[in-house]
Image (tube, rainbow, N blue to C red; front, top):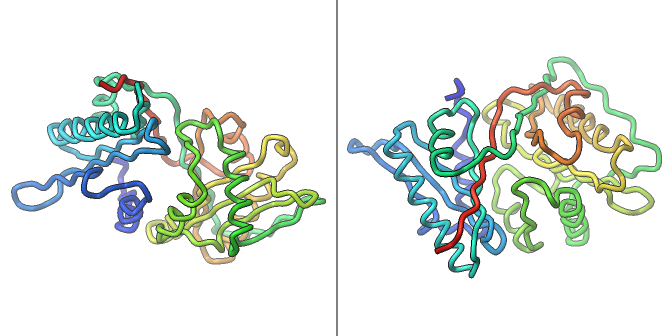
Length: 286
């Protein structure tokens, strides 16, 4: 679809150990007569399951159609179990994946936002940025108090963005602990006057496939935006990745983000490499 394998075995394993995902009821693997896999699908209920994400993957139209029906049937079951009158279902597709985009469009989904995967090259040494005046950098989240603070900053920074559903603190901790590509040493907080106001969460998701660092989340509380904090966190990550011998740094940006995030990433030298779309359908639970 995109010319290279944009997934690792670890990526798949991490998805099916997410807290709240039941491998007995929420995932399907389709095998051909010769035993080779030809498709898979998942349904993941977020929060109280009023918002649900589905994934459908197959190069065979009939398999994709069957997986779509299974994932949507499970989404409606989740909605009924949650006692909801209607549910919101999200799906993501590469812009290049014409068949999947057509399948979603044919079933009343609408493209609601676009994501760009951004990348910057580290073939040359990268200088560490100067810490902004009055800012304290806290690296790592190894105790309960720091993790609680980090979660609060995450919620305050991302609330209202497409597809974001706040997770209870214990579930957020469990989700991070379950993932093989994330550890607490990669979480960084910025403090101003003793208050945590910005967060950067990195992962090893692209080391195996691209030898690149990955910024999984970057958020700044609204009242502290425009002070260069996000730009500092970006350049700090670039310097750390370059020093570790990474070929580059990767992140995903929602082009409809309430903040001008795409312009920020372009301004520090990042370039778009892949385009995804976020599709959504709201439907009654019957």
